[in-house]
Image (cartoon, rainbow, N blue to C red; front, side, top):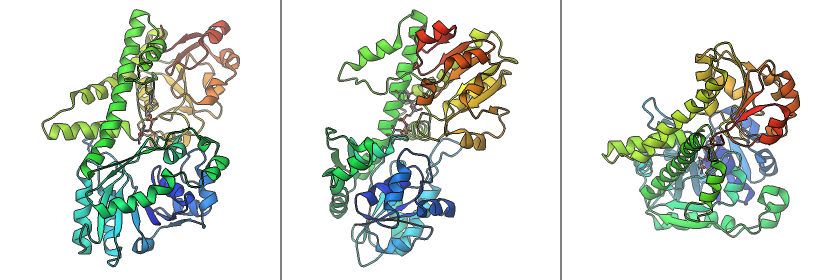
Length: 456
Ligand code: UDX
């Protein structure tokens, strides 16, 4: 099939490269010539494990990259994968999505049927909105010449390759029978694991013969759009819940890891997304929860549980700062080393990361900050030019004369640090491990005072 993906960010580049690997003739379009040049030369425009290799294997074979929209005319399916940032009031800004719809519309082939897919996370009702734009500009008939489908992405950054090839579910939201046929044909190779040998031999993360096949779920477009928001908000609520339980464990002397394990043994609860943190972050959860909350308020059906999770998340960041403060008494003039700036490991993405809020608060209280991250320092610096902080090449350097080390992101690299070296560099050997991943007794043995969350 001829596939076009508009947008080469975290969603578009992974989606396009995956369809190309599955043998579909795929073109990725982006207005940024730098990103397109990177893809054309076989590189990934973002950091995502193994994506470079996936692109280099497919480029100029089944994958093409362009800045113009010429390929739209021949496309069977066009994915809209552009950014949907938040406006100042927290609701989603659909400018990029509507601009893409306006670009696509006049280029659609009137002699064939084209499916336009909203892959980006968009508010409920956006499929109808895109349909109206395309109809108006092109003069073509919806359902006859084209149809707009909602097919939300559920990719986790850092595990995107695995998620795109082994999704739990593929959700297709459309009212058009013809669009359903086209989407089924597109996903057929994925569902049947066409060329699985090649997947598993080329990428170790795809060598999972026992992984159950994805559930293919068809519904109407509004329900599909809602599934995405309701899922992300539910996961945010789940994390906020365990984070609050951790705070109570701190007060009562219980161990939250044991509590999470014991809870997760109940199939109805499940053991995933019960990992304590300084809060959830990233480009999805903060944005999607706010959007869903505002929509619910607009319709007079406020999702109070989601509202509570958003508030709880902010207080979780503060809780971490309070822990450091109560240990060091005053933060004024104290030096704090931060390990991890990205919102989670295996990504260079620092958007709405826990580090941003926590560092801002620490600076406000007069602390001197040294930071390290294996992949996220460049982006963090770009977004936080106003932060007077020291960027360290090596994680050990954050410990130099430090009064505290705070682990925010559980990169593997931090689990393998030579902690005795950090100990020798610190003024006060205190560690706050916000992910409860460091070897506590070993560190205590070295002389560190280590605190976690919910592990008093
Ligand atoms: C999320 C959804 O998981 C994905 O399905 C969707 O399509 C996009 O949004 P992503 O933003 O990449 O993916 O990150 P995710 O792995 O879900 O983590 C989100 C945040 O929650 C991170 O800050 C992470 O550290 C935090 N988290 C996650 C926890 O604090 N505890 C957990 O147990 C899991």
